[in-house]
Length: 147
Image 1 (tube, one colour):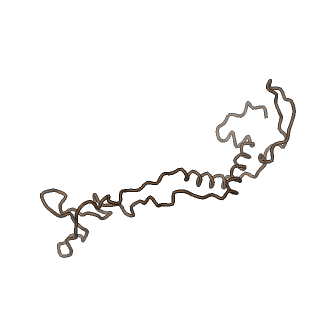
Image 2: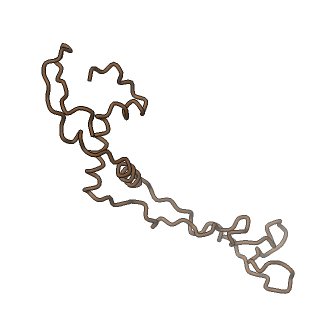
Image 3: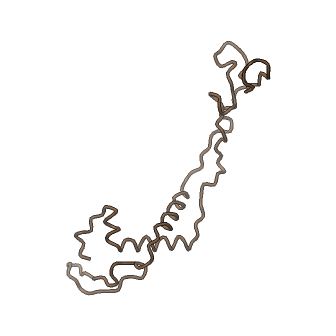
């Protein structure tokens, strides 16, 4: 809850010219858990999709040597005359192979947030600005402010 229900009204010259009631939204319950939840999920809504190429790690012709050669059955690059020939390919454990579970663009990037929760978070965050201790805890200098 806010520290005081009445706030002073100041003229342009800086003198106190009256008092008025604090708006009801400033006395809303402080719910940092809801504010954090809504902020976290809303910040996910401006992400861009990313993914690796579907061909990455699969652009070499390779086939398994089968059993009986005392090597793992992973597909191996064919040919000769280069250090690449005979090396393992395609697998996520191989150098130059594809990654495990390649990232896809159809991942769930955005989040829907309940409108009521969003409004609650806004009113709760606004009410937190009425508590000087919380404002000062964030590093703002409000010692010189009259109210």
